[in-house]
Length: 155
Image (cartoon, rainbow, N blue to C red; front, side, top):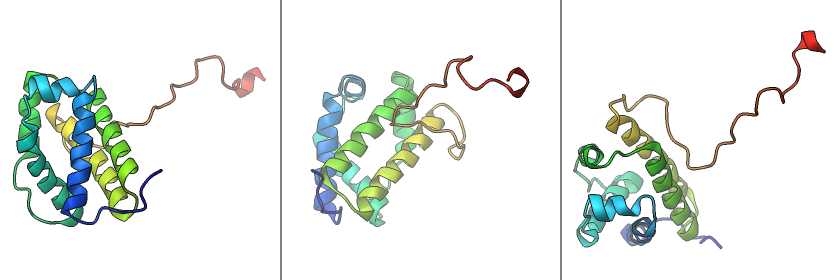
């Protein structure tokens, strides 16, 4: 059952980011990117990501790095594709939903979708503002041809 507690401070952000990375490192699709490609030092990375999310959610002004540059460098080592960003978003959204609920929790999910979509577009050389993004929810494939309604002239 989701918490009735919303994200409200650095401790909440830390709990969210820590649990998210526990899940991400264990994930078979994106875990190896963190561990085998980026060789991420989680103890050093967690405070940086807490600064990032505290800035995103509470306008704390703590994050002053360039997230795009890091992802472009990583993309050169291992092609970051829509499926990777979609999995990241699915894990992030699930973690938020499992731990928090409220206005800031919803903002955390919305901003993650925007940030992930922008990073995906930018690492592939597209404009960050293009309205092309990934989705973490399964999208139903179009119906096979011939199964829809018949055109008016055939009726």
